[in-house]
Structures are given as C-alpha cells and as structure tokens.
Image (cartoon, rainbow, N blue to C red; front, top):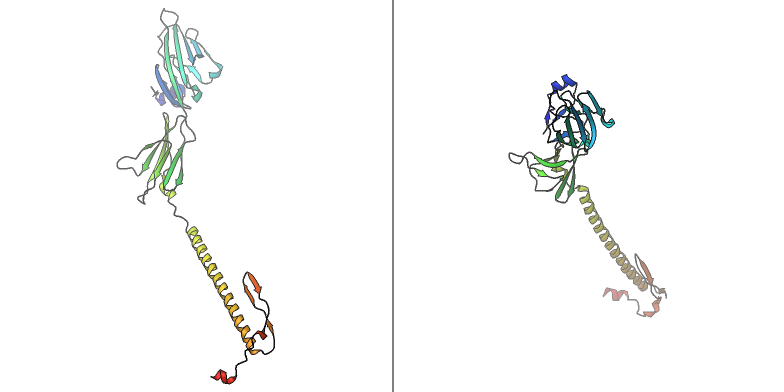
Length: 299
C-alpha cells in the first residue's frame, strides 16, 4: 500500500517539502530514493505505553509516552522521529533502508497484549534517461538500451509511428530487427522503468544502418582492373616490337652481305627485354653465289 499525505497539510504542520509516503501496517511499500516514509500506528488514547521500532531486528527507536522521552539510535538521529499521534517517520530514504520494519506497542497501565505492526519497505533508485546503441550486421540491426542509473530496471520498446492504433511493443533490453525493402521510415523508442519511476529514450530511426556504400571503393576496383589491363597490353606491345626489330636487323644484315664483296664475318644477336644471346661468327665465304648482273635483275 502506498499513499501520500496532502502536501499543503504537511508543509503547514511540519514544514516538510519532500514527497511523503504513508505506510500502512501489514503492507509492502514501494518508495523512491530521497522520499520520506510515515509509518502509521494507532495507539490507544490516554494510555501509558512504550513504543519500540526495529529494522531487521535492530532497534532504532524506543519511546515512553509517560516520560515523553524518545531514544533514537545514533545512526538514525538525523532521519527518524516520532509524531504526537505515535506515527514514526523516516526522512531521506536510501537503498540500504529497504527491509522489514517492526513496531511493538506495549501497554503499561492496563493488562493488554502487545500490538505488533509490520512494514515491508522496498526502495528503488529512479531510472535515468536511457540511451540506444545500434549494431548493423548485414541485413540485421541489433538495438540495445541501457539506463546508467536505476535499480531493478526493466526495458521495453515501442515504435513511432504506432502499428495501427497501438505501438508495437517488444520486451527486453535488446531487440533484433531484420531489414525490409525500403518503406516508410520507422522510429524506435526504448522505455526503462522500475516500480518507482519510468523514463524514455530519444527515438532512433532505422536509417542509421541504411547509409549507402561509398562509391569510392567501387571506383578503386574499376581503376585497378583497367590499369592492370593496360599494363598487360603495354607489355605485349613491347614484346611484339622487340621481335619485329630483331627480324629487321636480320634482313638488313643479309642485305649487307649481298652488297659487300669483301670477306667479312658476322655475328647474329638475339635479345628481348630480359635477355640477350649471340651466335657463332660466320664468314661470307660460305656463299660462292655470284652477284646477279643487271641483265638478270631486269629479267
């Protein structure tokens, strides 16, 4: 059970400006860090009684109505007090205050049984605004949600715009989405919550993973292929020209032989861009064929 006193009443009566939660005996109370809790008890009026409050079997307050005196443990002196109607308050609730509280009321003037009031206090740290991260893997996107502050946080996802009349909801801290063909852009919002608070992230659009591939990488491949092709053609042309030059050299060498009557030795050289070799020398005397005359040439 969780109820709250009228704020104006508490400010007027006690000067309290913090949020105050009223705790009823026998209930579980969920509060947020920093709030004030008022443990309500209803002692008999005009009775001589002793009130003892313990937290997980550790006594933090005791009070005798006849002596108008209260004893508060040193660890709680600045945060715990008792009101005129017997209710006990605790200021500035912290996570370590979660647990079982037990208030015992003993009646001294009359033979009455003790009154036991138990309260189960659950304390939650407010969740902070969550952040979304996106991991793009081929045709899938993995969205992750994380809130840096908060206790017992649960996560859920909603779409913007909604699917039909309602938002498409997915539970869990992560969500995997399969990319579909281009359509109307969809945004996702992550909600982080616990029993005491709720916060939502900024929307993220699936377009974060739809960035087109850079045209530079494609042009690099094309240029490399074209360059390799031209290099191969150039090598082939060089080899062809080299062989042609060797043939011309051979032809010119034989022309010299025919036009030269002196005995001369010749050596043939064969080469390409990577090697060179020469033949054994040959003397023109090997050929005794006479030089053709002008009449023969004319015929």
